Length: 503
Image 1 (cartoon, one colour):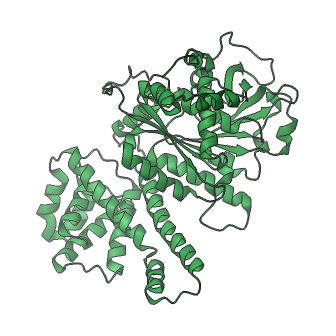
Image 2 (cartoon, helix red, strand yellow):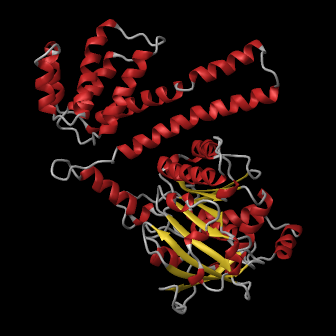
């Protein structure tokens, strides 16, 4: 319903000179789309007393979209058929209002934008519901599939609307006329150390990246089978979860009470079952082989308590989800994230880790598999932007990865099937297992939008314990390794003291 209150709010949002809200062409288009949507839907009756002011809002949005200035818009409006609103419009332009009020106005626009997105598939949904009511479907399997696709289509439209609103909010900046403060605030928040999520590896955090995984970015570890994609994902989760966070550069930070969970690492695996994932995390954290872990279990060690005694010291937890390969899409991931947020809150989500990209499916059908993979990568990037979290995943390299002898031989064109994965990712680290030494993993930072690229990395791994034990760095992949003399400060040695402790 388009109420007079909403129309007034939109005019204030668009015309008030004292607001610091960034008003982009995207916002003007959103208002016009909302008006057109409600005018075209007979189900939404617009009150007669609102229609005149609604026409004024429509004209205002059109002129602003054409690049007109606020004073020029006002003069044009009050010189014509909207002169009856001259006093109201002048007050809208000049009045002092709290920034929180404008934020609320913007929220109302977003809500109605979501309504528009939801109703784009309304006819299709209505048809499915009518089929259910009348029992006119041919087969129940087809009915369920049609219903699921329709609901996911509705959800996808809503998420795309959110993504566009987020991007458009900072999509333009006139350096001579606009206020920089909102952009500077975004930069401060995005690149502050307390906003990053540690990889758990000091060299990756401090040398390759700007402190770790950054919000809204997509990170991909590419490797062949056995290169350690799953292992490095689980390692970066638990190593980060047990690493204390330094909030000294956060002026508003208040330490949480002991035991309160404020860091949630969401791990979705489509390859290893839930019990296999638990075993790998436990083995890595406590340097246990599989027989040693089974020995612990058979002798009554409380696995849950042992893990949580470490995690809760740093107010962290890990939420693991297993799904069969090719059974879920990125839309399902968003629904799953929403479930976790309902329990812990949005601000608590430290990151989404997916093992791995190539095992996700798409809700839309594409003629070519490479286009599907590119769409999945873009959708994962969208999740990062929408939830303001890093998204970390793995992906397959081509067969040439099994013949790699050194990190200098790793290249982005070895990403299997789709170069779109490379285009949509913010950071790609390539991995290949050494042909002669099973414990050595060659790595290369092939792409990095925030940090160093073309950097050679070598990991030493203990796959019996699912653990990357140390990192060696090459400042240039074509030069010999430079061992940083000390092993990574977050490696397994940090856990060695737990091996003989009783919990």
